[in-house]
Image 1 (cartoon, one colour):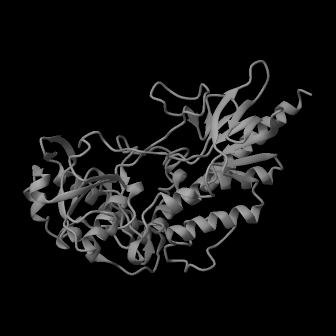
Image 2 (cartoon, helix red, strand yellow; image 1 turned 90 degrees about the vertical axis):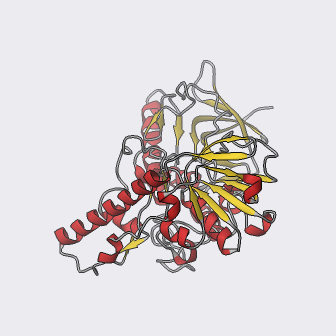
Image 3 (tube, rainbow, N blue to C red; image 1 turned 90 degrees about the horizontal axis):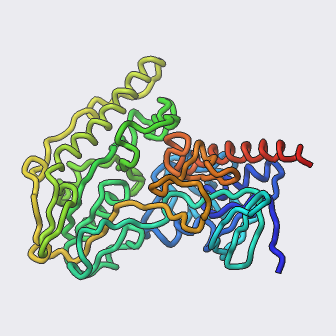
Length: 415
């Protein structure tokens, strides 16, 4: 049975795949976008019920379409974000095929291009774009054995407090997901412990401007390399309940019990690293540094923005910071659930090409792979700090599409 042919196969129809389709279409490059589920499926079915975007609607969007039913400074719900990408795909006429899973990609022998095997048959393509993003395989550290507590789930499987059995909950992870889930669980009346690791803690808003705006005008979204050792540090910021600055002191005051990094487990006892104070202090340092940079920008440019001296004042450390809990007997504490908000790993097992280093990480520069004809899109720090964010992936997709168009121009001279 002859295979189908197209110029470019884009794998994944989330924000990266839809952005890629727009720019390929603008170049007039024939392509297909293959999605094993629905467009932006992870927003719909792999996030908790109350999730909203972490950036305001004026910022977390593509240039070609606004959220017509979300106020510019509001935070779109997860369903609304998914609907937005579906509408965007329809607007640009993206050739998306849903329900088609890519099972393997291999380079042709003796001729250009790749054989893309899918659940619906084979496709031959000159170029392949891996637009599956960074959130492919949930990671749960192998610390607590199965059966130690009734429920252990990753944050991608958490939906709402009613899903969990009665009892206390330990949430592991101090990024946006862990903080928001812990806060929701506490508000539902649960006893909640939050394991806090290294993190950045920006202000949600300062001097009347959202932190997304501040990162933009300060040039921080365009930083091309992360600070040393901060390649995978999580950002603790929230759009929940209208948006607010994450403050671990306030969380502690609301009854959330803070503990250090979850380190080990033995015979029913979970042990924590003695790093709670240092992790919170480093988060405070990033928070205060951004405030100082914002103040300097205001003064340098003569802007009339209200001063917020109180934002620079940090309250006293909670008791658990000054006297950290070294260990916890899970049964004695009544912990019946652990929610692991511990991030994701990529999964490119289907991409059988020489495009990865010895640790399985894509070898690429601005999305252009070490394997000619293969591209990556949507990964953190692909080209800059904003690469894995909605608006950032749109700009990276333009670069990748331009690169493909240039290569097609050279190849056209072969004929």
